Image (cartoon, rainbow, N blue to C red; front, side, top):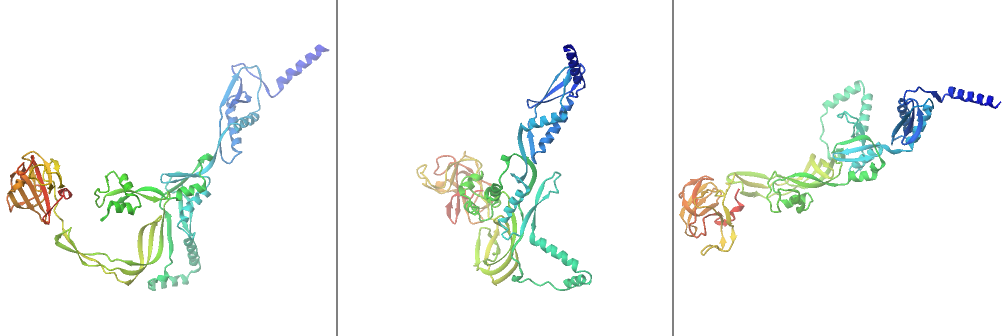
Length: 517
């Protein structure tokens, strides 16, 4: 009986193995059964490695379905093959479930669907389009106190990718357009024809001050705004409150300022509300507060501006005193440096309605719509010269300055301690040129100056050239600017070969270096 029992049990076990679906008779052709590990965790046994990828894809879908956001998880897959005669393989659905559990245990991070707002070079990440709109609305609410305008996001038609940009709507304009459309629908047939006919015949009446509807007339962003959808981690998102502060708060930004007539460095610094020292530091071409600037020069300045600028136009009413434009009377016999006031000005008074344009808080333009003069302004009348005054150049090429204008220690006995010109050391025989065109009034010996040349110029100034070795012009001769008039030397009271040069205005010597081009 025991032997029979053992035989029956063996047959039953053999049959179970043969017919149970989890067990397969496998061919002996190398690795024919495969153990699958995901993130070092065994997730099942399969008979074909190709089945593993399908299970992993299904597992990822199951994991992604548990969240509305983008879920990232590590998925280090390892497959170990072996060769067996009989082997048990797992159901693929069970393998998928096991893989889902392995992925869930190694979730790396969850990326939030968010929105990146780009304004010029500045970017900020927000959690939703609602927050984006709230940020943009906060930028215009600084100026739209009546809540007449609102922002919307629209697809940027100039971009191939799905990039959103902004569009600002006026609630009042939309309402007026809707009312106009309704009026057109109701005013049909003969009524519409009569309205159009009378509109053409009736002359336009000039508006009174009371007819103007003052206030905000137009508003738009002064910078391009781009919004794109992105997936980001929590720490990469900015809270709405912080984003509003960053975007609307004034930042110091560099701009270019073009020098206009009458500008000085201190005035430019004051006008742009920056310290003079900072203005000098920002511009390499400016050495100090005494550096020369010319009309048309471009200087770097900083101005307070928010990250997102807002441009607007307001219709305003105001009363003001005003100045009439200066009236100039040209005098062709005078130089442009000569002017004379013929009539003093007097301010007038007027009442005005105007469209004033702004960029943030700074006015950028003004268009007067209606003006009523209370009393007229009297213009200032100025007579001015039209002739361009002569220029002055250094009288020699090269040379080393050895003595400047003004007080000095006398270099030799008989020399003045109050130097009335500029000295340049140069070898004897160096060409001396006329600093400006004019008429020679003296050419010859000049006592302590040695050989000298004096030239009178058309603007009333005189130049003098001293300590010459040879004079090449004579009194009464007309010379051109840059014409050779003498050779340098060491004559008169002199300590060495050099040229002494003076400029006189009204008979008095001035510092020549202030007048040379």
